Length: 90
Image 1 (cartoon, one colour):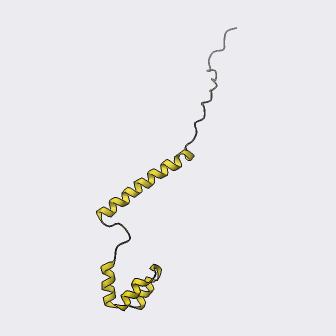
Image 2 (tube, rainbow, N blue to C red; image 1 turned 90 degrees about the horizontal axis):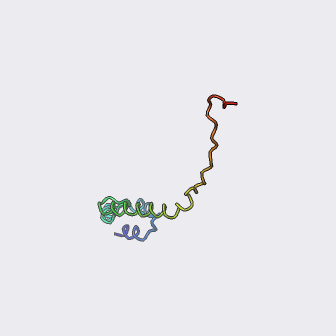
Image 3 (cartoon, rainbow, N blue to C red; image 1 turned 120 degrees about the vertical axis):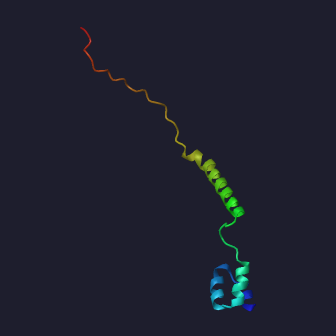
């Protein structure tokens, strides 16, 4: 249990080192009991992840769109080229 207490007190980036130095089977069992995956692997987690993605994407479109929309230029009058044909009389 001492190793588990050291592991619980360690900073997040040092836990791997503490885990290896204080290797005990009881520590492994207790650690596995407290383990929570860092990615959403449940239906609820997937739903929240998808909702966050949609909200983030929408917010990006709303905030960035005014800066990225191309302003429409007025249409230029096109010159009409004469159609090739017989020359005018005269």
